[in-house]
Image 1: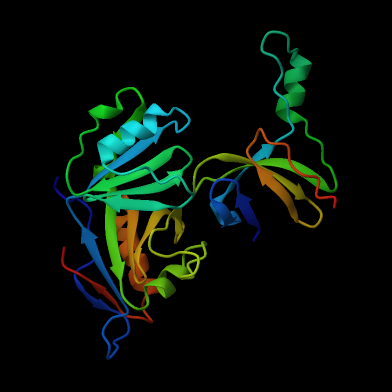
Image 2: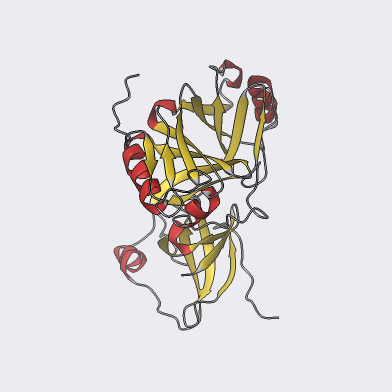
Amino acid sequence: MLEITCPYCGKRAQKEFTYAGDAGAERPNLETGTNQDWFEFVYLRDNPRGLHDELWHHSAGCRRLIKVRRDVVTHEIIDTGAPSDSLSTGAS
Amino acid sequence: MVDLTLSLAPGTYGAENREGPGVTVSKRHGLHILHLAGDLSDTDFPTAARHALGLPLPQLAGETRDGHGVRVLWLAPNRWLVVSGHKLETDAFGEKASVNDVGQGRSVLRLSGRSVRDLLCKGCPIDLDPQSFSAGHAAATLLGHLNVVIDCIADDVFDLYVTRSFDHFIHDWLVRAGKEFGVSISAT
């Protein structure tokens, strides 16, 4: 099980969180978005090897959405923050 | 309100120890429980809260404060649980906060005894070591797959806030998980 540091509650078990999707998906503009833009927003996702930004919902804690930068190969969590935060790259 | 949920019959379940049961479970009645939501960045809100509750709002994660018969638990940023033995006057909040009475929807169980931490550890993913979770700390978390709020009152005394309809389930879980320690269910 992963341990995810909630920026509001501190370190908690993955069991308390619900995965809420890719944090990088950008919602098309309501006025100008084309069908193709919407199709890509709803269905198409990158499948990167390595670092990935994701949204997690702290559903059994503070019930806030948080952003998690995770290495999908090693499961290492590099950084977490509020959805609007820019996260560290983990490079030292 | 008539209590429609069935709790387990009072008595002692599980192991029998010379020192008595490791955990005692009793239900707390007559509490007024409010869910308070307001924006701390609006300076009028904490002032109104202090006025209405008689104590400042806890602002650190997992912090609790009490005084004048009122206990305030930090649940999330800008969210608190307010527990009191008497009805609170909340008009002072005006438009500054959203105040909801959630008392009828919660069961509050008082757990005490020398094995209470060991019992909670069996179903709760947070670190319950006395060094990191002591009196003055509360957390919204899970217990046996159920969303609960755990409030540490003293070293071996905890309050458990459970959705009322899961009252029987949580009693059952406590008795099963606490078999090795011995669990006493007090008459309500």
